[in-house]
Image 1 (tube, chains in turn green, cyan):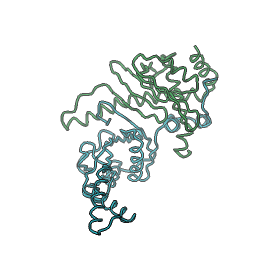
Image 2: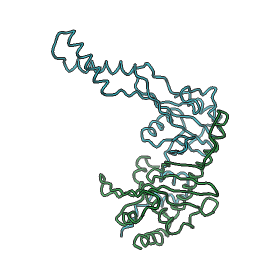
Image 3: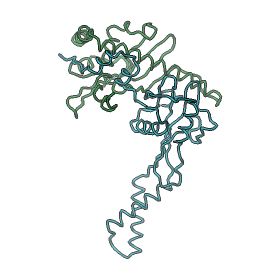
Image 4: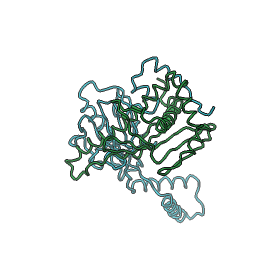
Length: 175
Length: 205
């Protein structure tokens, strides 16, 4: 494996393309997103998307779309002009439980993760249980993003990417 | 932003390698080796080390349990002394005036000025208490993953350095898109080659 810093910079676009693909899929074919057990994933775009386009090494133009029910047209226009999604907030539901979080494409940092509520820790004896509960709930989001990323990578390295996925994304951008 | 906070922030790492025997004792040994040291009343302006998850200001890896289920749960503490620049200026001005009065001169040499500043910084660093910052860490040993509950660049860098100093033979690799694909998706050699050959897609044409 190459040096980690080299890999980080060389393939930075991979995470941005993943988030762009994820947004496209959520908008156009959300049923195709499946979890590890092959069950449909109830995932939706949250209240924030950041898009960036790198014009040259020192110039980065960015567009941030914020707010519930915000008009996302500006984001589509930005992708048409060469931008990619660099950060997206997502809302995930499984049964009666709900999670919200923001995923950053460059490094897959998870920020603002709100898991379903767990009982407050009132004494030291309860810490161990609380940690196990919280880790279990956080793991759901990590595994979900891992599964979705696997689907993306499989498509990205397949022949279908150029033949089907890219033309479909371009149709969406110009529709 | 920590493990039990209402809102969490997570940076993920892959752990390559494992301990040949008794991982809990090996982890304990590594944590004790780099436990946070107290820099109160010391001329040191920063300390970085491991601490206990439940008692971050009185770390103890002998008694306190850091194993929860199959995970190791602990913390990284960064103690930093920040001296306000105005306080430095004030103390330098006072010390300079005193030196001038004592030597009955109107000016101090460049060397004297820097000597005074260094002395003031030393005295203030000893006197000022450090500000601690604690970042939760969960080592999911069986999953070969470590989560650091911070995405601050400086905290991540300190964490990587501290981890490598503490656990020899264990390699920590930051999980970002490429490493996640390469190390966790169980790709075949052909797929791995295809992955390394991809170039950015152009959606604008």
